[in-house]
Image (cartoon, rainbow, N blue to C red; front, side, top):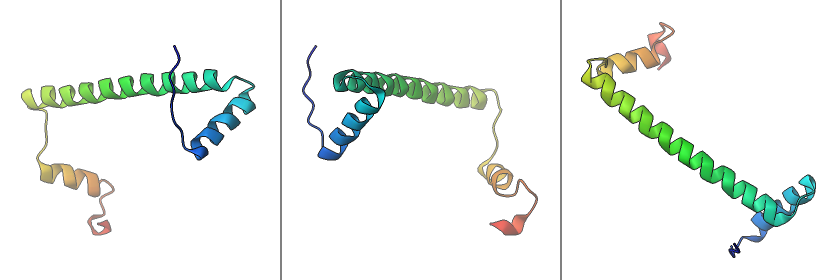
Length: 84
């Protein structure tokens, strides 16, 4: 399938350099990069959904802290309150 994508001259140069460095056709390198970013995006999205669901599940079962407890645990984990 052919798709035309308009790139800035800087991105085109980076893509050409990458293809030359790898000894591959520029179209193949572009397809590989697009595949990787789409796979990463799908994984990142699913991980975010899983994290949100885990938080909701934790809340429903009573596993949560107040905001003040969270802040104290975050900022004063080393026991030095004057670091803030």
